[in-house]
Length: 184
Image (cartoon, rainbow, N blue to C red; front, top):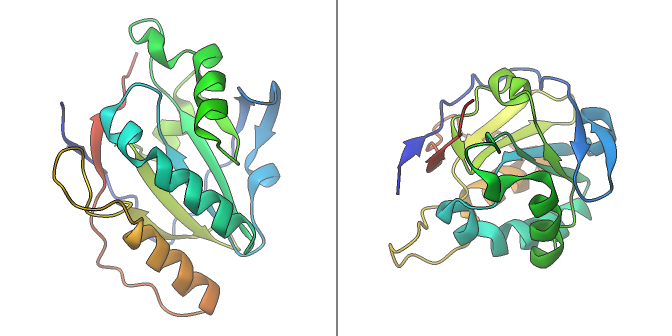
């Protein structure tokens, strides 16, 4: 299992726009469509990565809990589906339904969106404020497959709670760790 860290995009970066195919609704979805009034979580995930499979239950919990509080959620897969057919859009739709995603699961066929966000691994998490400025990027929590630590979503949860409360979010943030994005 590869252990690739996040590239840690600069805080304050404006969220790059996108128009991507949503494998669940079979429509095109933009940043504007998923943007929350209080903030937006953009996560790069895929179907087959053991790190993503490990965190899927917490992604579902966080999505359901924080969407009600005004934070938009979206998941994007940018993997090369020719060499990694388990990540194909038709299987993304099955994964989203099986896991119970309450958010769109978008396919980045050209990988341009992943490059614009400087995404490096799956899962890779970004939290933008209501003005689409980056306030958090990094890990979900300290839990990894096989390390025995509970899955809590603590790091991302703390950042979202601070954003909602109008508190300063610490700039000391730990990178996410996961499988590298499968570039073409």
